[in-house]
Length: 125
Length: 222
Image (cartoon, rainbow over all chains, first blue to last red; front, side, top):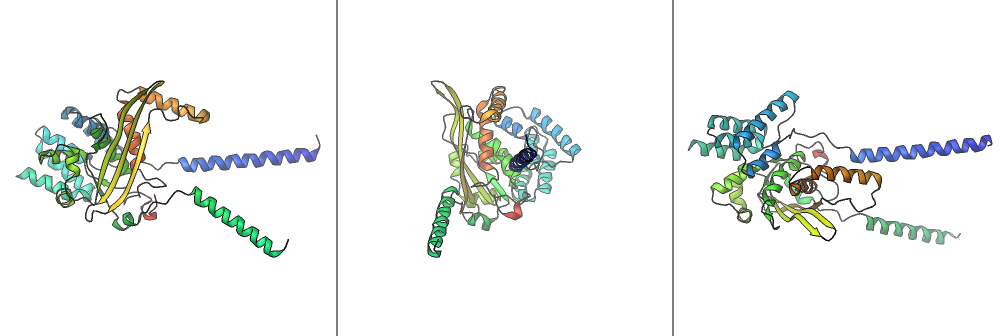
């Protein structure tokens, strides 16, 4: 094999690797997903469980544990979780804790204020 | 080559290129009302179910908060919303969808209302097997004006990627998805999760625009 031919092949290989690298980077860029805003864990499953009529006690235990983990991780609680937990507390007669959770929902998500205030007012009646 | 002929040639090429580009680009979604309204919070009403499976409404509803919240919106707690309707004597999604916006504003105070319809939910059996398919459509309405801000449809199937020539990677993904799906009892609920994610996430094309808590909010692009 002559030197020129080898050089040519080398160049060809380099070009091919570069092209492959480019495609890989492009795909990587497309597939890169943003870090989740909230720690969801079993919250959606608990909501579904509520609709299926599962016991509030088990859901309360699961969500309380999740809140501890979220706090330990320094992560954010998803919208609705505090309010949902508050509703579960009210179902087992723990109204003070319900109020506490609705206030937490309001503090973390001011957008919830009108609805939370309405629920709190209903409780006082 | 004479100049005139070169010009003609370039014009022809340009026209052809423009024609091709026109074909390739999907019709752009009109986001003008959405951009003007800038909703921060979304009230998701329990979905109206057009399928035969009564579980569809609550399945899709419990999958709806996550993609919307990750898109940057505040989503009103769906179970409490449902409970509030029930306390007011409304138990059917159709009746909840019929409540006028003024009343919804008064009770929930959300910027926008999401109306969901489940078009298909569950297994379809055919000669060579079965497929679990979930299909849903969404309409996002401005809670103050009633203007349509965005609408979309999405579909997910347990059989996706099974019969196409997606190559080795495609086959591997399919195998994993199948494994995950078959390891749980409620396959329809899982497929609904995929459909809901497709329907209600920020994505290019005609997806939702990012909300205030999304890192891309300032860009205003899906």
